[in-house]
Image (cartoon, rainbow, N blue to C red):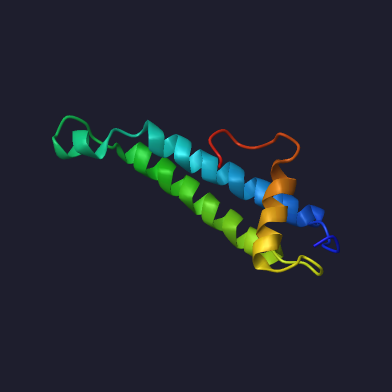
Length: 101
């Protein structure tokens, strides 16, 4: 375990970009009216809201593809260890997006 190589800067930045894109999707989604209110006819999701959410989802997907391209590196210890190390390194500086887990 002590021989693990830390994540490279490109992987850390890709994780941060994905975290930010994911947080933006959550922010937009949380601002939408509830599905219960929509089903009851008490609220609607506007076309502008749909477009904004789709753009955020597209950006998140692009960030995911970029992350997957750099998620593994020599000496990462395996998939689970690499993911844990990458998340820890990306969030270590206190740059964790609001609401990220």
